[in-house]
Image (cartoon, rainbow, N blue to C red; front, side, top):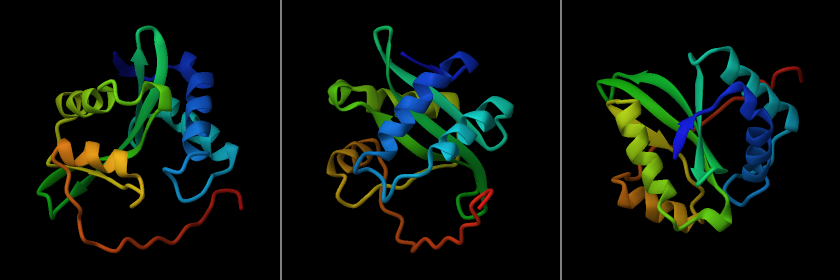
Length: 148
């Protein structure tokens, strides 16, 4: 089962996000305060972020964090898969595939976009099976961390 995150999901979201940022799927951990701010933003509005929980039976075992933008290049709305995390013991059971099917039915877009660490081979296999292909742009950022 997949459902939108709700206010009562705070603790499970914070735990799952902490696990994600402690994994090899990311370049570096982030401060716990950033994860708390993310949940606050999820509860404030769906303008910037949306999130869903992924379940095995009644147990939450993962989450997807999404954002939206518009791309002239794609000719319409873009949904960014900012984070997709499934606990290791729940991987390989079809939840990743179910997430992408749910995503396309729930949030139609001209493009779906995500980032992946080059050595995250399991995730790359899933993304390729779901029709994702590399986009050969070099991404550049300039961060202004809030409150720093």
